[in-house]
Amino acid sequence: MNADATTGQPETAAPAIELKGISKSFGPVQANKDISIRVMPGTIHGIIGENGAGKSTLMSILYGFYKADRGEIFVSGRKANITDSQAAIASGIGMVFQHFKLVENFTVLENIILGAEDGRMLTPSLAKARRTLVDLAADYGLNVDPDAKIEDIGVGMQQRVEILKALYRQADILILDEPTGVLTPAEADQLFRILARLREEGKTIILITHKLREIMEITDTVSVMRRGEMTATVRTADTSPAELAELMVGRKVLLRVDKTPAQPGEVVLDVQGLRVIDSSGVERLRGIDLKVRAGEIVGIAGVAGNGQSELLEVLGGMKAGQGTALLNGQPLDVTGKKSDGKTRRKSGVAHVPEDRQREGLIMDFQAWENTAFGYHDDPAYNTGFLMNNAAIREDTARKMERFDVRPPNPRLAAKNFSGGNQQKVVLAREIERNPDLLLIGQPTRGVDIGAIEFIHEQIVALRDQGKAILLVSVELEEILALSDRIAVMFDGRIMGERLPADTNEKELGLLMAGITDTAHEHSVEEIEANLAHVHATDKGA
Image (cartoon, rainbow, N blue to C red):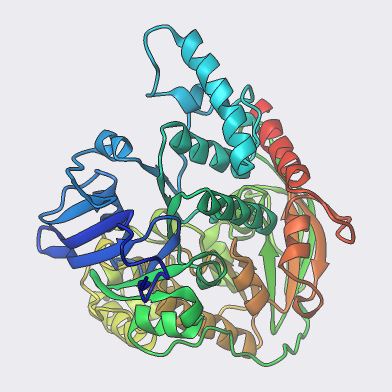
């Protein structure tokens, strides 16, 4: 019997999912254009593409959130009319979203039956779900406490609940959207083991991710989308990260960060005993000691919510804290009493915030207005009592050209740029000011792979000019590639510092989970328990 060239499955096997000629437009924007794809049963099929490539739109059509303008959907060889998510579930399709759809003050069991109750009386439904949970845990290794509240368990366990919800509804096809974005490396590895077990049991999995390493590690086949079209579907074993990146972007992409060894100089930033207590009385920073030297990149690794954001906000003058800090040997106020963001900028601190849309840009304002924010009192931008708007627009045009912002239109509103180009606008504004210290949070979050390459080059170039850079990122690959020194944060503390050449993702992942004894093996359950404890402590406060 002949086999399909891309999947290895027998040609006579009906695809678990087949999309034929799917097209979808939103006004003048065509998100999907004549897309056809076949996903064979019992496989893990990856879908990758840049931002705006149409991946999420395509999966939203498959799950019934959107209705295609044209095209057909077949499930297990039969044409399906998927008008909403209930129709998708009835067709055996489940979806695990990047942002979980769970009720935090409900138990695991209550979340699993929510929307799938057998009648008005909940007791029989809960009893049935409890029995089913025991079976699913045994079959797929999805162990979870059915009586635990969602708010008291870690994100890795919450993700298992989402998978269990889909399996409880008898899903044979699972769509996972960026499933490892909030997981430690150990939790991600455990997820992959679960997915492999699901595949062994005959389930079909569609994995949307921007991480090429994950595609290579776990998928059987991978489809690449670019600008709303399907450009290729290949067997994963027959391709490489470099080839996939080129298919995504349409040109060769440098996947590694090309940099020479750092030449650290004098201490630029010296932080001692930095603490932050939020409005709820929770101590977010618990005595941070940190130094950043000229000509080096210090990366802060950690699971989101462990104090990294507060560290950047205090140092950037956005939030008040306690403790002391020196910038080039001079006091840097961290109490919020004597300084703010404007004072920081005048002292040589530039800040690229973690959330560009909420903190870095005003989305309805034009690009030239956004590039002037925080620097509007620059003499080059002013003539007497009035701002020289023409000079600002000319300066913005130069910045847009240097940072390859597309389209290079200073009069275009920020909201009309892609995420990667929005990030370039913020980077251009801050880096071009020649700061002594650059604070940068999540530099490539939601950014296309081509733009990632460019942003990394700019950060390294600034380091090579002798500037000090404090980098926060949840992407361990990025931290390892860019950093000259790595500090790992957990529960508002620095658990340890490492040199990239002397560590790896596994060791950093354990430190991110609060485990300093990295020489011994630790279970995923132990890691999740540590993370859940911090989560529960914050909730209780």
